[in-house]
Image (tube, rainbow, N blue to C red; front, top):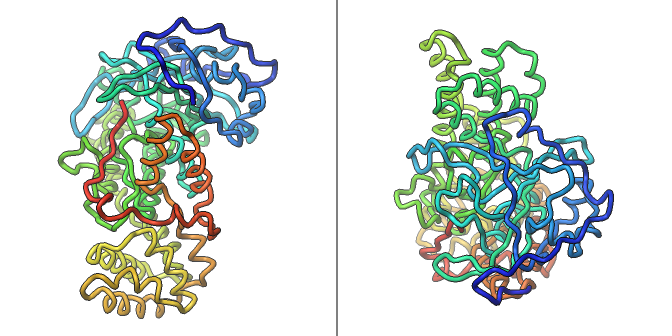
Length: 510
């Protein structure tokens, strides 16, 4: 990977042209349909663009010519030096609660929405740059990003996709040939991100904070057309109520999947909760190793607001903030509007519990007939056991497959070092087997062997920052096969030594 060799940026080189037909047609629906929700802006060209990563499968899905994008023109495109024909980049405006405190104006401080494309399946997808330079929303920042955090988005996003979790995805990462300055001097990079949309709770908060109910209604219509088109013909009040419920149900399903994987988002601000139900922003995120319901990895989450066990409650809190923006649309009587919104927010815990129970039925291999109360008790007892004995979450769930095949020894070994661990496990296994779990194949299909282990991610990003992409590429290949038993994946299935896991912290990369 080429590295910057000067503190002052060079003049950007001329950008080569992409061949005709290399890209699909870009649309500008967000900019056209939502006046006042964005600012037209151009990416800041960089000195020496070089392609570090191209998601060829995703490019093909979007109708792009991956072969053409691998060359200098692709590097120029993904670094922001070349704007696609027909694209009209914009910096999106939004507000947000960040760690509970409200900011009425945040917006894309280092990102630009290039536009929307229709993929080969007929779905409209956003294509956006991250790290493409200052915008009117930069708030004193440099608008740039470093190689490590952008490649982290690749690793975790592709892992989530392979694990079946709704997620934004990285299309490409390009080096800029320039330095960015954080605690250290770091090589810069630009991420190209693909999303069902970049609409978020904070998008609604932006207009609501200004008392602009008309713009909130425009945004609602735009979001419904994008994500819930079957609601488009309804009266506004009914549309708003049903839209709120749809968003809440999507978030219930999403967070339940996070919880089933031991994933901690780390920065569940309202500007990081999508309307689509996709995971967005892989900054201070991590997957836990030894199970701990109170686990926090974000270096800036000093109070544990976004701890693992708090994520369902924070999702509900964020949804209440969305509901507040919709109150004028729900009913002309403020009290009636609050009652309607409150009913949906109060229903969220039940929707989440049903999704969580479905996740754990799948992970524990529980077959019909289902017993809601009994299945919940069994799953909760398993988690208490893992917590009490500080057992590796991913490995323990994976080794249930061996237990289903009659071999308890690998699972027993995880509990052997803890007083009472083997006895507690044995007692739980009796209840589990009485429930009649499915066979080993079903359990292996439900519980990953490979996740983005924190030490492997850090190793890969440190090497990439130093110019060696081989560890990143090897880890990415493993993460794309999370359920495989192939021997070559074994190093990526091992937890970090306890000394490395203790006190592990992640950073937002801004």
